[in-house]
Length: 141
Image 1 (cartoon, rainbow, N blue to C red):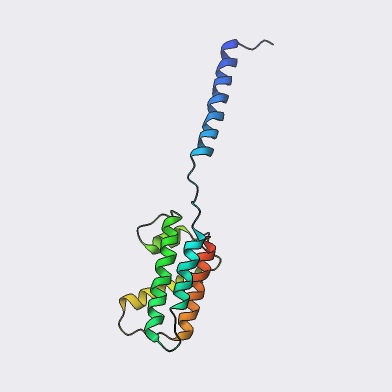
Image 2: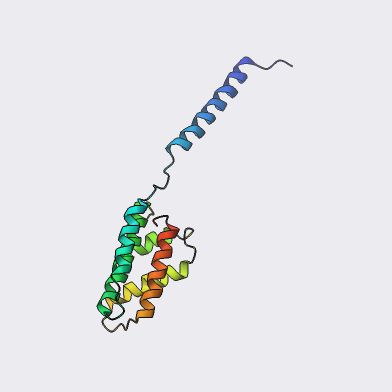
């Protein structure tokens, strides 16, 4: 049985278009950018070193700065969302313990939006541990 030359040419053309399309997708696909680990480690150490057991004002500031650092990493990794919460949802598959990071972010939100929040040193350390793990999960430190 001899194949019609026109059909063979059409099949070859379809095959070539498919191959070119796959190659195009491979090379143009947006990959998640690598983060500058040294920059994040330096900033993270500054957050950790800012916490003083005897200075409760340092606890709140450390939580704010840690939260901002995680948000910066989310933005630099190009997770979608207008707010940090939306970016955190976009990154849900990245988190090793999503409840932990969400809990830390909620503490930050309470500190920012409520006036009667009682923050302890131990709560601060737990929140900072969660933020640090989030940065590890994002490949920032």
